[in-house]
Each structure stands twice: as C-alpha cells, then as structure tokens.
Image (cartoon, rainbow, N blue to C red):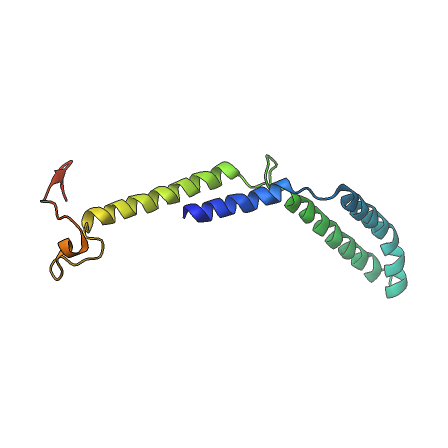
Amino acid sequence: ELSNGMLGFNNCLKIADVPFPLPFAQLLALLLVAFSCFIPVYVINFTGSPIAGPILCFFLFESLWCLNEVAKELENPFGQDINDIHLPDFHMRFVDCVQDVSVDDQAEMLKNPFLGINPGLQDPAQHGIEVLPDAEVDGMKI
C-alpha cells in the first residue's frame, strides 16, 4: 500500500510540475476564436437551411469550447479552485487505509502468532519460532 501511495504521489508530482507550453495554449485560443468566426459562414453554406444552420453551428462551437475548458481544467488538477482535486481528503483516505491495513495485520498476528504454521500439525520450533506461554494484555488473552 505504501509503495502504491508513493507511486501515485510521484505521478501527481509529474503532472503538477510539467507546465503546458504557453505558445501552444495561445495558439489553441486563437484557433478557437477563428473557428467561432468562420463556423457560422461555413455551416450556413453547408446546410443551406436558416433553421438547422444556427443550431448546428451552436452545437459545434459549444462542443469545441467545452473541450477546451476541460483541457484547461485538466492542465492543473491541483489547487484551490472549485473543480480541483482536494489533496487533504485524498491524504486522509490514504492514511486511513494504511492504518486499517496495519491494524488488520497486527490483529492477525495476535490471533495467529505462528505465521501460517499450524501448531497442532507442525512443531514451531522446527521453523525457529519460540512459543511463548499464554499471556494477557489489557484484559485480552493472546
């Protein structure tokens, strides 16, 4: 679990540290403005309909504009904006998962101190395991 957490952290760090090239972003914005200026003329000539042309033009323009907005949001997913990934929540969930795994492993060790060796069928001393006498910790017999 811990290695998966570090892998995820390093992948997030790569995304956060590599900036999107500014000239490319400016070129995309310029092409989107040019598209918004020329698409009505092209769609009206293509469809030849005064009703279907504006509707088709609106949907084409809005779809490309929305894709551009999604791309800008994905460019930097970490921060304080309303649609950004809230990292403290992810961190707390990861810490809870690590604690759960750790507590489960500890409880399993308390229940089965022989680590997979069946004490009724095998002698733990053959495997180098010292068998301790029954003890009580905080009222719980182990």
